Length: 414
Ligand SMILES: *Cc1c(COP(=O)(O)O)cnc(C)c1O
Image 1 (spheres, rainbow, N blue to C red):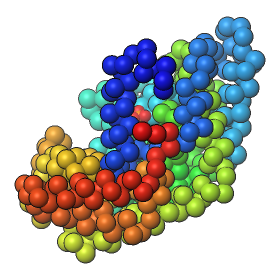
Image 2: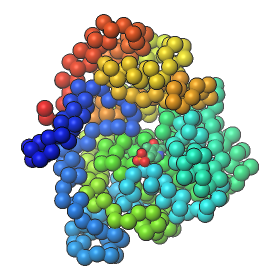
Image 3: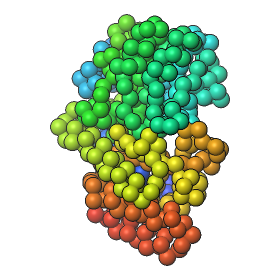
Image 4: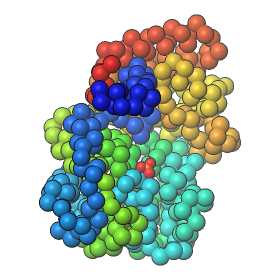
C-alpha cells in the first residue's frame, strides 16, 4: 500500500485503522467474512477500468476479449459449484439481484409470500417501506412463537388462501436449516414460482454441509460475500426456462455496465469453493456454531429455536436484563463485533431490540475451532453480565487481542 500511503495519507490512515480493527477484533457478524489474498488482488485489478454492457459475445462496446473470458469462467464455475442450468453473475449485490428476480418474473402488484423481517426475513422480502413491499403485494409468513421455527403446514394453508405468484424462501436471521422440498411441494400445489434466497447459507451449501435448493427451485439468488467468502456481489441461478427473463431484468432492466473486477473475483471465489478445503471450512462453520450455542446455553442464554443447525445464533437477551443495542455497544468496546437484532414477536423496537445475532463464518475462516468457541461464550457471558465493570471490560479486551494475535487475517500485514 506504499503508493496509497504516499498519494493519499488521509485515506491510508483510515484504511489502516480498519485493518487494525479487523486484525485485533473477533468478527461474529454472521454475514461477514475474510476473502483470500487472491480475491483481494483481482478485485483491486485493472478489470475495474472496463465497460462491458451486455453479456459475453453480445456486448455494446469493443475490447471485450478478456472480459468475455473472465465472465464465462465465473459462469461455468458457478454452474459446476451449485449444479445450476443458467447463471447470471452481473448483479452488484443481493438487494439489486432480488429486485431483478422480481422485476423479471413478476408484474407490479403481483402477490408474493416472504418471511417477515422481524421473524428472520430480509428487507427485500416484502418490508412495506422497501421497493419490494411497495411494488408487490407481499403476504408475510411468520415463525411459530413457541418454537421459533417455520410451520410448513401453516405456510401451505396461507399459500392456498393468497395464491401467490412466487414464494420467497431463505433468510437473514433464521438459525434452523430450511426444508426446501417442503417449499417446493407448496409451490407446486399453488402453482407459484419457487425462489430461494441463499445469501446467508450459500457457503455451507456449496461445501455440501447444507441441502442445496438449486436442483428443485426455479430461481436461486445468493450474495457472494457472506459464507461463500467472495467479493461483495451476487449471482442469480435459474432454470433455462427463466434465463432470458432474468438476464433482461439484470441488464438492461436494472443495471448498466457490470463490475468486471467484481465478476473476476467471483470467478476466483468459485474456484476456491470447488476445492476440497472448502468442504472442511463449510462443515467447521456449523461445528463451531453448534459448539458456541451449547456453551451459551450453559451460561443461561436463551437461543431462538433452541440452538442452531447453521452458522447463525439468535439470542433473546430479555432474561439477561440487557437490551440488544447496549449489548452490541459494550461488546464493541472489548473488540467483539456482532449486531443487535429483533427476535420473533419482539416487544421492543428494531432500533433497540431484545436480541443479538451472531455467527461463525468469519472466525472459522480465521482458524478458530471449538476451544475458541468456549472462550467466546465465556467472554460474552462476562461482558453481558457486568457491562459497566471497567475491570472486566479491560481484561476481556486484552484477552481478545491476545487470542486474535494467534490467528492472521488474509491481506492484513501491520
Ligand atoms: C444479505 C442479504 C441480502 C442482500 O444483500 P446485500 O448485498 O446486502 O444487498 C438479500 N437477502 C438475504 C437473505 C440476505 O441475507
